[in-house]
Amino acid sequence: MGRVTGIGGIFFKAKDPEKLKAWYRTHLGIESESWGAVFDWRDDPRSDDGSTAWSVFTEESKHFEPCQKPFMINYRVDDLDGLLTQLRAEGVEVDAKTDESEFGKMGWAMDPEGNRIELWEPPAAK
Image (cartoon, rainbow, N blue to C red; front, side, top):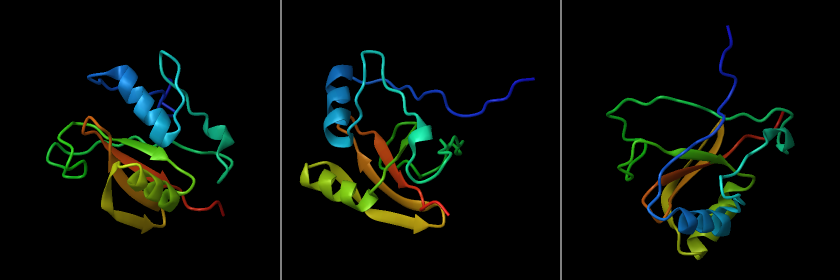
């Protein structure tokens, strides 16, 4: 029997899809076609085998706050501190809190439609 080996895509609705895609292109460098974008982790500079996480949270979880939507997208980044500084300079709402652990560094921001974005810098490859 086949098993899931990773996340094939993340899909979400937007009030103005073209405007939101332009925002992601400008602020996070995500180039997309009319149908979306693909991230190939084989080019991950930190390791030989990048990964995408999938996790289920309880209905009561506060992890996505202040976002009231039932999802959050985690994006891998190369330089979390540099990106957070850049986003703040561009007027993006960035959470003052960051986190660092053996799993890497995490930071958070909000897109213009109130979606919480988790930014993750993986730890250096060993």
